[in-house]
Image (tube, rainbow, N blue to C red; front, side, top):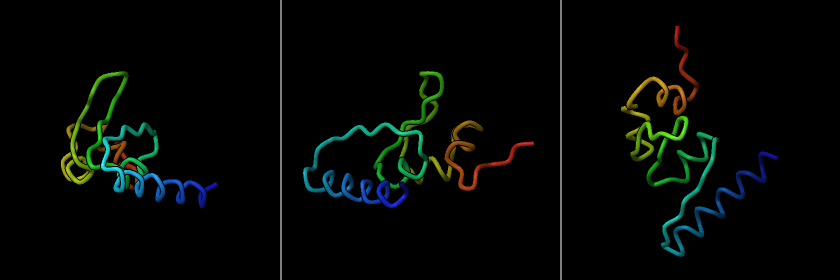
Length: 78
């Protein structure tokens, strides 16, 4: 459920801060990626589309795929 997901996100972020360890978190959820990560890697078909901070990806997406994936609400492409 949504409350549990939010609580889990908070706990993961807390552990990451406390341990100071490198963490790889795999998700298809943009909100999780953008709120938990210091750096994000966007993949498509096993290929790296863009690497950067959440703000870099949001402000300067490398291509339409990244823009549509990161955008909230999702970009409407005509």
